[in-house]
Length: 251
Image 1 (cartoon, rainbow, N blue to C red):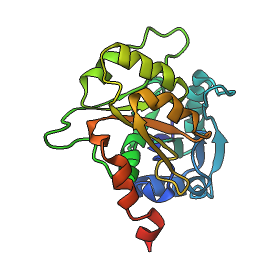
Image 2: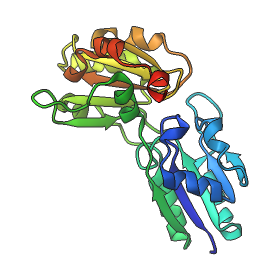
Image 3: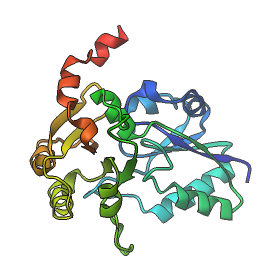
C-alpha cells in the first residue's frame, strides 16, 4: 500500500473551525470521501482532489459502511493522500473504529485528525459552559440511535447520571427522549437547549424545559441538531440575548 488514509474531522460546519492540519491535508488530498453535511466551503479546499460523497442521513439513501471501507482501501492503493472527511470529530459517533479496523487489517496506514464536535460548537454558540463550578462536573455525550441488528442502546442511565448531557442524532426522537427521562426520574423542569446548524451563520437556538423538548424539536428545519440538557442551561436564553453576534465579533 503506497498511500495513507487520513480520518479528518470537518467540525460542525464553519470552515474556519477546521484545524490547520485538516486544512493542509485537504489541499494535499488526491481524493476525498466526505460526509453529507460537510459544507461546500470546506470541500472547496480540496480543489485538486476528486471528491466522492459517502454521507449518511437519517431516512435517506445512505452508502453502506462496508462499501466505504473497501473504497478507502482501494483508494490507498492508487493515491498517496486519501482523506475521509467526517462531520464533527471522527472519533465521536462517526464509525471511525470500523474504518480503522478494516484498513489496518489490510495493511493500510491510517492517521486521525481531530475536529470540533457539535456539542462544543453548540455550547460556544449559546455562550454556556458545559461544566460549571458548583453546578456541573460531569458531561456525557450520548445518542438514542441504534443500528439495525445492534444490541439495545443503554443511553438513558448515563444521561440521568451526568450533570450535563449532549444528545446527538436525537431531534427526531425528542418526544421519546423527554418521556423516557421524565419517567426515569429526571425533573420535567430541567433546562434544555436545542441547537441547529451549530457554528454556522444560520444557527438556531431554541430554549425550554425537558417537558417542552418535543415541541422545541418540532420547530427545527433539516439541519443537524444537538440537544443539551442540564442546570448549566438555566440562563442560556438570557446569555445568548446579551452575546455579540458572530459576524460582529469577526469584524
